[in-house]
Length: 490
Image 1 (tube, rainbow, N blue to C red):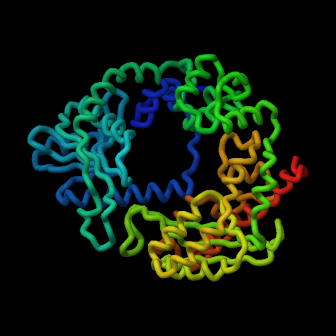
Image 2: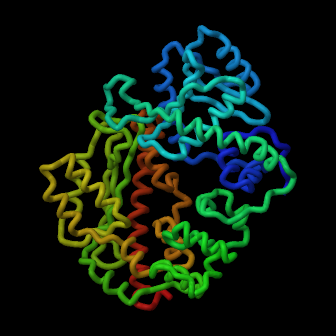
Image 3: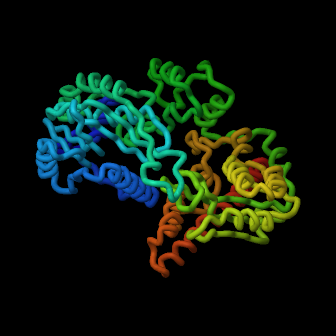
C-alpha cells in the first residue's frame, strides 16, 4: 500500500483523526473515489440550494467564487481586509497544511460571526465539531471569531413564506470556542501522524462500527466483527475488546448477552441458521389471499407542495402483489402520483380499492403502518377504511426478528441484506433505480422538471419497476421462510 504525498488536512480528515489516528492516516492514502450515487447527488443538490437561500439573507455579501485553492485564499484575504465587505460566503483559509471553508462570515465590531448552514431540521452534536474545525482554522489564519451560529431548517416553513422563514439560527458560541481550544491541542499531532510513512497501530473502538474504511484497516480478516451483535452497548463492546476479542466467533459462551444477541453468536459460531419452532405458527397466521404492500415516498428540504413541512414524508407510489397462496401471484396493482401535485388523497382512495377484501396485508417493517397513519391525518373522512388496513397488517421483518436468523445477515435484517441470503433468483443490480434514496431523488427531480419528456417517461417506468420489485421480493422471501419452517430450506 503506497502513500500519496501529504497535501492538505480537511475538516473530515481532521475530525476522523481525532477519533482514530489510523483512520486519518488511511484517508491520506491515494484511493479511487467512488462516483456519487443518485441519493448522494440529490442530497448535495439540496445542500447547495439551502446554502444559496441562506446567502440571500445577506444581500450585500461577497461570494468567493469556485476557483483554485490559492486564488480562493487570496480572494478571501482581500475581502476580509476590506472594511466595506460586510459578509463573505465560502471564505477559504489555508494555514500550514490545514484548509477550511466557512459557509458565512459576518463582520462584527469584535471580529467575525461564523455561521454554519445545515440542511437539517435538528441540532446535532456532530455539528459542534464541524464548526469548531472551521473556527480553529480561521483563528489560526489570524482572524478573530467573535460568535458562532448554526442555521437550521425551520419546521414551520411552508411554500410561499419569505426566505427568512426557512431558517432558525442557534447560538453555539460557548460550545464551539471550547471545542476549538481542545482541537488546538491536536493540531501538530494530527499533522505528524498523517504524514508519517507507517500507519499508526489501530485499535478497535465503538466508532469502528460505522467506519467506511474498517475493511481496509482492522477488518481485513474479520468476517464477523463484534459490533454486528445486535444492539450491543458500548460497555459490553469494551469488555470484549479488553479480552482481545474482535470477532463474534471468539465470544465465549460464558460472556453475558441477551437472548437475541446469544442467538446471533450461536448462528455465527455454528455457521447454521436459527429457526424457531414458532416460525411455522406465526407464518400460519396469514389469511389468504395475501396482499404484499410497499410504499415509496419523497421528502425534501424545500417542500414540493403547499401546506407541507420541510422533510415531511409524502407517499408517492405503491406496489401490491396479490397471492391466493404462498408464492403464487394472481394480480398486481400499482400507483404512481403525478409529480406536479400533492396526490395523497387520490393515493389513499386507490389504495383502499386495491386492498379491499379480507386477506392479510404483508409488509416489511413498520414503515407502511406509519405512512397509512399519515394518510389518516390528511384524509380523516377515510380514517375507518385506512385503519382497517392497519388491522390486517402482518410484519414479515418482525416475524424474522423473533424466529429466524442466518449467519450471513451480519447483524442486519434490512430486506436488502436478507433477500440475497435467502432468495438467489431476484436481484436489484440490473434496475436503473435500486434503492429508496434513488427513488426519492428521481421523484423529486421529476417534480422539479429536471427531465425532458422522454427521460421523464423512462424515470416513471423505473420507479414503478423498483417498487414492484420490492413487493415481489416479499412474496419470494415469505415463500422461502415457509420452506425453512417446514424443514426443507435447511
